[in-house]
Amino acid sequence: MPVKLIIFDLDGTLIDSSKDITEAINYAIKPYGLGPLTTEDTIKLVGEGISRLIERLLLNSPFEIDDGIRKEVIERFLEYYSHHLLDNTKEYPGVRETLERLGGYKKAVISNKREALSRRILEGLGLDRFFEMIVGSDSTPEKKPSALPVIKVLRDLDIRPEEAVIVGDSNLDIEAGRSAGLKTISVTYGYRPYEMIKDADYIIDRIDGLIEILAGLNR
Image (tube, rainbow, N blue to C red; front, side, top):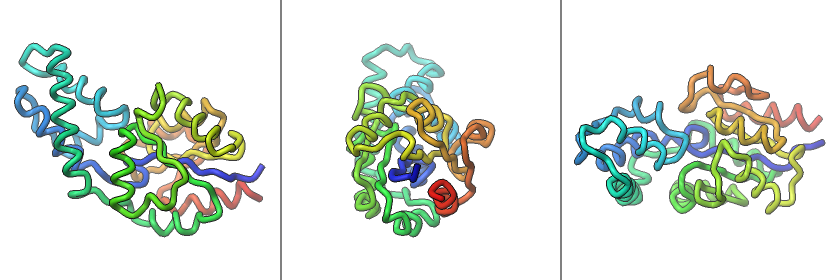
């Protein structure tokens, strides 16, 4: 059955936001005896959403951490990050050109970043016009690796699972897509090592490799 919909992950797939996220994290955790993180440190941690990332970091704090502090750190992160979303963030090479070439497909973004932040980044980069839907970590009751965000996109765009693929840089994307019945495509240039993406149905080193895969699926 021909592919009609392509679902993309955001961070590590369409955009490299690692430096801006790192700077926001370091601002947020500095008062609590942590950091600074390098960009490489951040890349190893991102994927499950900022709340989970902050929780993991605070486990190493020399201070006693309670729910109030966790909330404060997340608020500090969001305050800083919302004002610095596009200081260094940019799309990966070939993303814009590939999206242009995929004009015949419906396209959506599912991110574990909050929806408003995801939308602002895509708007700021001029990429939002390519997508029928932008779904964030707070758009559904569960985020990736849950299939719920994928199911929401399929339902809202009236697409069957066998008519869609999901493209991402993480095992979270593979799990979410597979659970919803989609073909999965992993990119090697993102934030996760090959060992974590090797079980995808297809693996590409550049985003424009998606063109050839779709051509094969639509034969």
